[in-house]
Image (cartoon, helix red, strand yellow):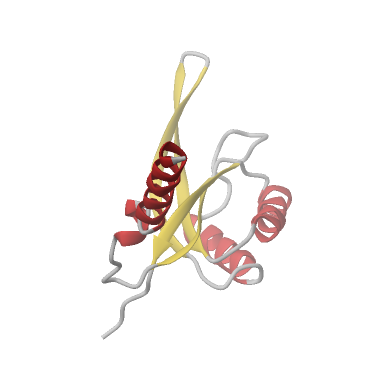
Length: 138
């Protein structure tokens, strides 16, 4: 009987001790007050899919892409870069629009990519990553 009481006491002590433990992730403070959201990045190569050459002016493409994006998402950051890839043994140089988007969903991104693909006849690389962010203003 004493052995059963002893084991019951140890079990209760273990339960009480473990119930006070929390995962270390919950203990971390968040001084920035970050929000969780998905981060989408669209890399839009401006070379026409059929000709392999850029047929539209870069500034015109930026305006078209910006308006298409803003009709589907609440905001975007667009930068211009150069992309390079192989076609056979040849290196292709391509102007690329890098579009970073927070607070969107897969359906909105799919809709805008379909529009860009069909209207501009260009390729779009899409990436999605979980992110924590906060817009900090003065």
